[in-house]
Figure 1: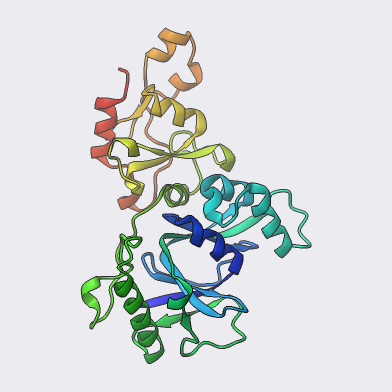
Figure 2 (figure 1 turned 60 degrees about the vertical axis):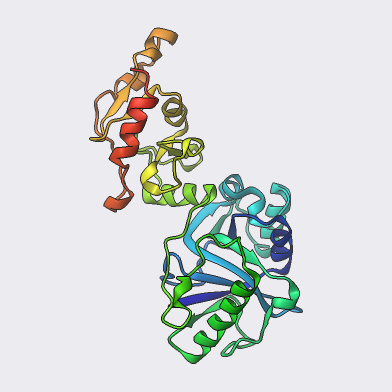
Length: 307
């Protein structure tokens, strides 16, 4: 199993360690990922900068995506490691001193189930770490360096009984064998990023690609035991998201758009929406496992839509 040790800003770590979030955005200015082909579910550890220079926590890797600063704040808010949008932007601007972009793009590494150790549990000087590493490096548990580091991580996780690790980052039965990755449990921010990218940043119904007006809609609401799986989501233009949640638009299990007659009956309008009546979704994820679930769509048809 490969894991990533990323160099972490001390202020970012300190802020989030006090907040105890369920997910975090480990962001980088400029929009470029420091790693390549990190597997979903891989451990991602936090290596603090000077003067600390210790591994002090970590999380489970979900997704890397490039987002405008404004959208990164809208999606993750204080889970970006700052108390306000102004503080967040100031942190980024300090690292992009020559950027005149009004809304600069940043790299967003989405991590779920983050954990933050107390200082006495930090890991000092992992084998194979070089002082000239600026952004991070891979470790592989098939090598001595990686196996020793992972054993140190597991000792701390097991010893502290960290309830903040619902996914455990690994198969807990694999302590003495090869660790295995598990599918991470998505938080609300991760859900939005993963759905946005699964739909290639285009509305499922209209094909609209103006990112600020696109929203990740739950088919079965989270508040009604819906999940944060991509198959329970669709990327919709904001007006269609509102209509979908209100039951004035639905999508049938065979991926056709249905528009409720209630729009016309209540507001004597809706002509732009009725033009889409009966049409097949214009845009769906390329990966079949990410496409809208028939079961969730049936639930929405039967429980939400105003026929």
